[in-house]
Image (cartoon, rainbow, N blue to C red; front, side, top):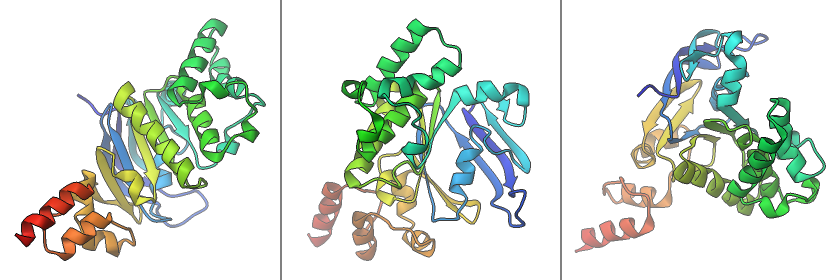
Length: 272
């Protein structure tokens, strides 16, 4: 099966800049997977995200979405219908004074019939656990609730891929938890492809795959347990690893587990 998104030797430099932000990125995103992209500020991860639905186009190389080249203007609408984007600040994505009107905004602009819009809005709000708030004013919601409404607005477009560019950066721990639980459920229960851009280590643990970026290049790619086991690499990049991984590493034990129970079992076996 072809990947739903493919980067082929992608380089990118902003028009006003001299330094390359992406340096020969090769990456494949499989349909239905949950991929987390981790990196420090300036690593290129947000620039990578913006290439996934043609907000940015490569300076050289190709990005393909369902086989469509993002540089092909004739395919732009199809690409943006396929890949929905959620950004850091939900206030920048909320445009209406009532939650359900906000979620309806994008499908209305796509020319979706009214009866279908009603169905899409209700379904999207249920998927993110915000249906009971459909008549509320968005500005009265918590940060986590606003971000879930922003996600619902993207879901109402019925994309195949949901790309979230540091969606929890402006949220408190409770709001962060709400958003991560929501997108994890969308992947596991609905089969949606999820790409989560973050610099929070703990948000990556439940992903199928973890990609680490540094200075515009991919420096690690594998399951979260595999990537976090590279403790020296992660420390060199200024990134944290789970406490369980750190403890096992310091004890010289295998670090292929992330949960506390398995960690405790390994330590107990070592003590015997």
